[in-house]
Image (cartoon, rainbow, N blue to C red; front, top):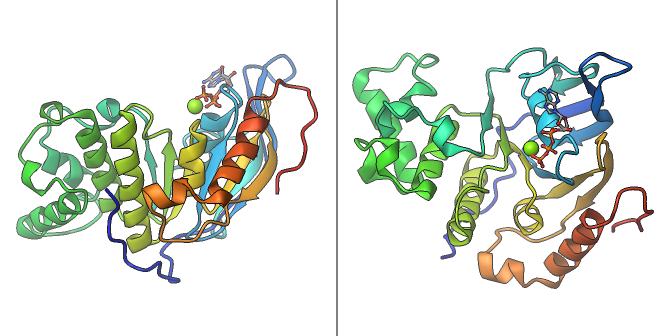
Length: 277
Ligand SMILES: Nc1ncnc2c1ncn2[C@@H]1O[C@H](COP(=O)(O)OP(=O)(O)OP(=O)(O)O)[C@@H](O)[C@H]1O
Ligand SMILES: [Mg+2]
């Protein structure tokens, strides 16, 4: 199942992100629900960083703020040196629900086209060629004329990935994008996303519940506390690349980082934790 991956390029197309004192209160301030409190995080250009934390701790809220889909109550997000105040042009948000993210009345090719057509002034032939290129990248070159509902869940998520990447993002935000597919498809999508990240070198920020997924994919993992979420610790995975599904999952470093993350996440709120190294 392991893919042949090109060596990791040191040249990145990614932009750095800086989350500065992010607080989000839903409802009236004072009596509202504090979802995120004073979250601070720096993501390097071209880095693969995951955010893990207990359910309801504010992960999706934080990612939506980074994406400019929601304004923080306090604090600011910078992409490179630009303050994010709306949806930035070169940032793409990949949703968990592929069924929701694809347009069912459009073919697979038209779904991919939709992500870049308005930005690039390409001829019809060049547009078709570009769609083919990205669909081939995710192994769906033969399915351009199909409709999303004619594909399996994993294939639909591949279309969503092709569409996200055809927009040439410098930052790709992923909110549990692999959680609605079966375990084997998920491993295959992990290998695919790493292969594409290695080739394109965008900055990736992944929100996930799946500790193995976070360790396998990431350079670093940010741990959010119980709500109101703030960054408790950022762990360097320290695993070599390219990563391979079987070998990397059995690397002693993988097992040790996984163990430490799990013991944090399984802890009841309010109990002290040992630092993770
Ligand atoms: N639009 C909203 N209006 C009011 N409260 C909200 C809104 N969105 C999220 N919340 C609340 O903010 C808190 C954090 O929610 P969020 O969806 O960010 O958590 P999460 O960490 O992504 O959870 P999960 O792991 O279950 O996906 C929750 O208590 C939730 O009820
Ligand atoms: Mg969420």
